[in-house]
Amino acid sequence: MIGTLEYLGWQRPWTLTAEDGSTRDISADFWDAAERLKGKPTSMDARGDSIALRADPASEYELIFETRGEGILISKMPSFRWGFSNVLYYFEQHMHNLNSRRIEVEIAEDRFALIARDAEDTPAVYYSDGNLAAIPEGWERSICRVGEGKNTCIFFTAGAGGFSCAKFSGPMGRMLLERHAAGQMNAGRIGNCRIAGRKDSGDG
Image (cartoon, rainbow, N blue to C red; front, side, top):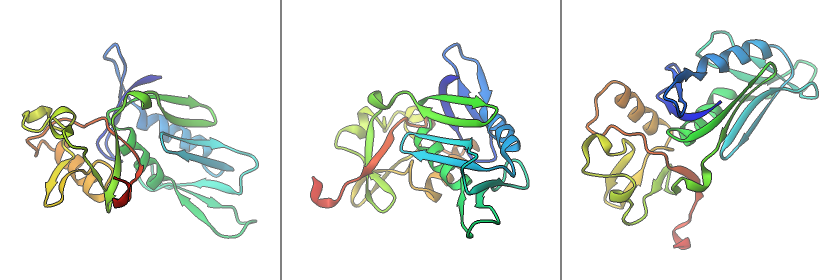
């Protein structure tokens, strides 16, 4: 399935809108896949613009969760040394990066994956100050669309150091999505920018 992702929070629908306007809550597909993988050897493949959870007989980890819509881990099986990875953390991080972008969703009996299909056409920003990304000069109008009411990106922020993007900032990004979902913001658009890494101050 290919469409545009709208992610408003872990416990809200993850809406995929196809080109014909039809929508699907892919969080249900994720949890269905998790049910099938639960207690089985599982691997998680997380890269910049894609993430997958898949059955892997060679993996030392098994998928663990108690309730759909809440926490989920892959944890080392008892026969191996202790260790785990937080599936919720990695998937949510990728959902923020893929938010409002064109993606492909792969759903199979032993796999659930999200893959970006728009990277070359998507504006890229870089972390510059903590978890905020710098907005290049001029983008505040052309990309963030400041001053256009509901067309303004909800993640646009302004401070003493200039303009920044909070889409990839973790707690702040989640808070802005919650406010947007509750109709508490003047801005009304989730921008489709992607995070491309970090630039040090000396990189120009």
